[in-house]
Length: 314
Length: 254
View 1 (tube, rainbow over the protein chains, first blue to last red):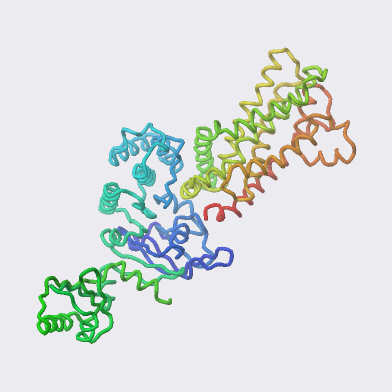
View 2 (view 1 turned 60 degrees about the vertical axis):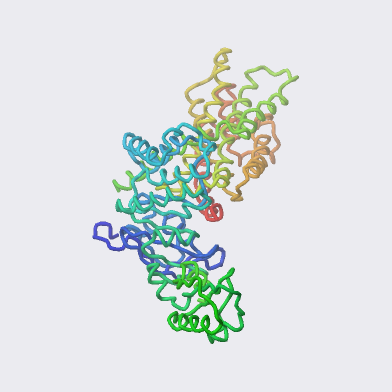
């Protein structure tokens, strides 16, 4: 137990492995999460994200390997780990027959928060998330956005060190999603470490300091979003718009490369060397009496990198 | 050692929070009312109406059946309801051990049983029916309620379904035969040797015997044996319930 040591890594995962009825769901993964960072955990459905989260939150036991969360071992100290976490699971799962207030009080009691403190925390959180006026309503009358906000309130009632958020903005309207993203940033500024899974690449890009991509139970990559982009320069592309229709074969021949594709009324050209391509495009326009109306050099999106990585055979 | 004891008390406190939650959510659910109140009442009426038996002689059967059905009414379906509404994972992510969650479920089942099963005794007192020893009877009632509640949680462990009706149906498959072989309608001493042998494997047999002893003054087993058998069954149900739920838990949340 490293609780009293000053920790740089609040989560340390070594060779973590989990089987479900002989199926290898998580395959000897290793990664670390630094204290105070927002760590994105991405992967396609069935990649092992939820299983990893369930192990790190003390719900499931790993079959092999170790994981330390806040200095506690997931195998030996699951209750201590749970005590310093807040969790928002993917599926909305507040008690719908209880009111928002009753849900918060229940969570407070289950985390052993003293009565006065949990009432104060609940009032503050409900006001902060705009749910105070509906605190006496049963949760079954709440919209999806309100339920999601309540789940965040429930995860925060014990003022946790680490927050595990599984798809926190999934299925929400734009305004609610934006509010939750802003809250995540604020919570991180307040010093909380956030472990986030999302299918929304733009959200991950905006929020996370580092991301890990998991596929077939293995970690495909871990890095900062910007570093991942620069490591995948072959995925950058140029989009060009001419003033007149252009023959695709002719353009491909000029550019001496196969990876040219029409996208709407533009052409998209994937290249690791945009400088040469731009020179060739200018030549092509001059030779064919064309005007270039628009030309953009695009860095690969996180989504491009994600697709590339999950298609790779690990 | 001290921290271990503290930890157990902390977990017990959290069990009570789960009990409170269960009372608010599950006591008024339709299947609980049907299986816990309406069904045993009609079953009792079906077996007693038209038969010229004094009320005092009917009382042990009534107390036994009420206690058994009410104490096992809430427990079986909690886990499947929680699985279906995805609140089980919410609970599992809180710092509460599985045994404490199950104990919270047992407490809520137990309280429902106690509240309802004292009603026949209350009416018996109003009708001035005398008991050999009311305090011992009440102790037996508490113990039996806890035992049957533990049984109900054991019955909810397998299969790890998220359909409450399935759990209720399967638990009824166990509960109904127990009612018929436990001396509620036919006293144990009037049963055949084979039936008596089967009856000895039912915890309800010992509770019915205990109640018959304390109300009618007749019993098949000695009173201490009735108590000990209920305690032993309770421990067996508790251990098996925890072990089986531990085993099926992963399937429940996946």
